[in-house]
Length: 400
Image 1 (cartoon, rainbow, N blue to C red):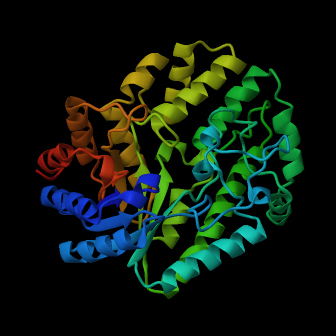
Image 2: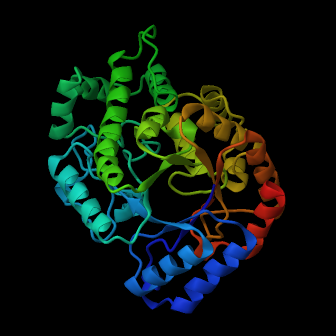
């Protein structure tokens, strides 16, 4: 499998020339034998139809790239639907952006609105499948307690059915203050998915809390995929890099039961939400602030938690990203966690302030991914911003 994401939401799409959009798609197909075109969620009708026709001509399956728990401009979450932090405040997304501000998966109105919206899209009859994105809780890496979700009344009621007292979890989290061991234990729990019951500094109910969050995400995924299956549509899923899935409530093994394939965002050189350097650097900052660990010690400690080699300083992490060996290990971790085909997400975009790529590093990464032997590649994340020569490099290194 070889997927390409195209025409992510942008004001520029309103003025994009139809021929330009098709020319880029045709040129890309000349470099790589793409199997799936994952088309954006807010594409003007003229462009959408043109891309659908061209995808069919090129032999690509035409799938809707669909965020679920964030806005797609037609689905507009109410402020009351936003996830709630332990302090009681609503959590606003990265830099206040609506596309990173998440609705609570347990809110009945959210569930109803999503099913209604997906049903409307299905009835359009345009798509051969759906690529589901942003079906998770917001990342808490910037502050693993204050940015943790969700503690709203709807989550509290669902937690009771799960046999979990969410108020008790919240109370214990907020009691951490300056207890260094607790901060370390909690970050380790978010990275590994479980809290060691032998540790006296961490409430064992935290493991159940992490499992509860995963159940919340799997439940809403099951509800959405049920109507997609009834319509005989293919379902793909966009997930965090395997070492980071626990902290956002994604369980690759459980989610595999409801989809045809999973793409993991193994972005080793992306410096924004979901990118490994960004998320891990946030944890480093937190540990330096709330524990006695130095920068080098914090990176080593996270490396030990994840079983992944990391740079020994934050500057290197932010400038160079992760090594090819770390990338290979992450892809292998994903393959072991999934029961459906896993696609390795490889960032090829050139976006100022977000990606820092060079040909030498890219070739090493592609070789590393090839060694991991995923079911395919998910070229990320928008063809519009990918230099075509990089597609040629994928052909040469990964397919060659």
